[in-house]
Image (cartoon, rainbow, N blue to C red; front, side, top):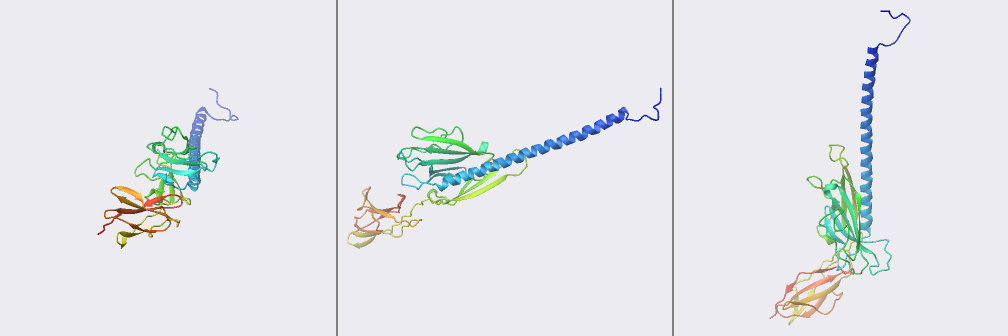
Length: 308
């Protein structure tokens, strides 16, 4: 065997193999770190996109509620309120005003499809003066009754937020929170969305988005109060409803009603005076109905009179 001359230099095969193993280990660690960085970047981008989409949903809901339609004797402005479902009447700013529904009143629904984490915005439009029946709210999603309305109206439905986890696990957290348990007394709605694009894993934590909407166009129902009838002489009684009130301070119209033998009739005609003197027979019952300028009304308790 010939010895390597003193002028030759280099690496042995073993040294080269060791160097390659070290290089591959470093390369593998680098690629793993790079993959982790890319995954985190994708997750961060997904979280940002979901948050921005939820913010747009809240903005859309705010605009719709700012155009809340005044309630009437036919229907209230807010027709359904639940923690995961909200239906109300809103005026369409793009209405043409050429049909009987000239102001463009429409129904708007925001609902949470909890199993899929999707928030849907649905609208129901009509051209007639009288509004059609509200579609069923028993389900929320692409196959619910709001996806295709019955004859006489048209519906549209879009997904406005994703990865919403409010109702995904116990305890559930309401997406919509109201300042009153009574539908016609709601004047403030808070939206509190929990967003988690990676709900299957422990991290990162949920994103919480919250905003409140004052219903500046909400016309609340008046309060009807009738004092016990006071005899003024003979069978004449004074009916006093002056304790009735309107939350917005609007002028009320009073309708005094009498029930005789099970039949209720209007005494005289609607009036702006809160008192009335009328003749009553023993066993008659009376009550008052008050109505605000928006035709939203309320009834008082009734009283049965006794005469000598």
